[in-house]
Length: 623
Ligand code: DON
Image 1 (cartoon, rainbow, N blue to C red):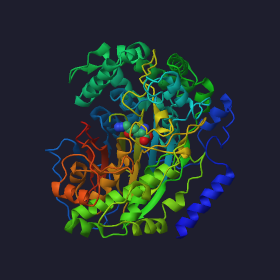
Image 2 (cartoon, rainbow, N blue to C red):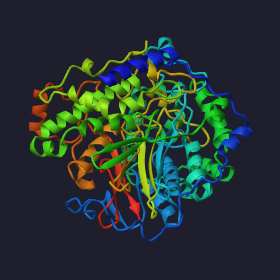
Image 3 (cartoon, rainbow, N blue to C red):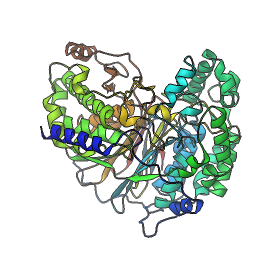
Image 4 (cartoon, helix red, strand yellow):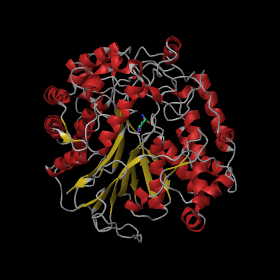
């Protein structure tokens, strides 16, 4: 009841404050000097220690959990290391990060190196044309910081620009997905610069080096790379107009429609020249130099509206992580403009009201039903309430509070699911994109980092020099009233396009602390809204069902995002469980992959176990 009153009050306050569409003022354009000042290192901030120490922590005091031993030898996507670890969805990128750790860099240095390398080897998922979120745990101070380098809408963006584009050309693909209007102002490099200056120990040119090497000398195309190219080529074949409109990507990375063979060496000389420039001139080369010119030209040619002011105005935001206690553990995750942390907290708060492990042991179908019901409530709230906090009042305390979870749990019927509307209504205002990785260094500094250009090869717009693929993050806004985004998600006015606003995300870099407040697990995923449920599935598998990280990563995952109103699985769920869910009124959707997880766990013997979801060919690396 209290929560309902809170909700009503919040709506009233929000309405009076006029929050929503375009309510927040756009920050004034900063001068170059201000921009440099913003980038300058603040004094006195504790740095995460650099050189590796042999001992990570005092004797392990965490509760002993009976675990079957993982079998890393037979599963190359699992890797055990003594001191430091990187788990990413690209073997080369993990190696790049691990190399930096071995050279004495800390987790932040290694994360930046991994991010640059992913930009080379996973151009369909991420790169300097994108943005993301990082969650950084500093072992020295036990402080955790969420860093937001999510894209921003250009200053000239309007809430109906995608609708207007459709009116002009009803048969064209949605303007929020393909072409210049789809491109949000990239934040990745500003993020990289920020974390390196604030928490890193190495210079930019040092951490770029492994990526530069990969771009110049080349890397071998793996199955994931080949599949992504083939899929994009077939998209061009289905719509030959794309070849004339977005030809740079087609001619270069997609090799005029000839996909690479597995094992073929891919070199990226254009991107190498951008990396060299950034290494010598700094990230400014991207936001105000020659690379900026190339971005603006590519966007303009593709019908976009981005200006140099948009690039100069880009700001990284440090935010307070979402914290949620779950049984004996503390879960740390990212706040809006990502929905990840709030949805994870809401689901876990609801589940914590049940003895889930016991229920799962006796009645796995009931445990699955509870999981789905919790997701339906949390995803309905995602649609109703969440957006960029600079523009909308997000009732974060209410949504992540235990009282609210209690109220939602009371609404759950163990025997049946409810109609969609019962979970909430949204005022619809009239898998291969994305890459997650995690890093742990010998001092137990932790970085969980998710970055993306959204859909595979983003907007298909690529800069002519420098080979940078630009994101289509504008599709994460509620871009066309009444229409879902590419992931079937529906959001409302809270997430309408506005100048300078950040689109709502599902990215969920997560860190779990044990009862002593020490990190015990870090994870995240790619896969749009399935990011959130992938993280939740693995969390519940490890924390409640006591699976090893390998088992937890491989286990069949279950997904529900409120709308569309169906339960999805990856892999083959037990037919009895499916039948039991159907009996409760759940619709079962088409089976498909649900997110790609990367995770690192601290084992009892004080070593680290990295897991790169086998569905994408990543390999952890460490030493
Ligand atoms: O920020 C988001 O939620 C989406 N842009 C993520 C897209 C994604 O994960 C695509 N993945 N496979």
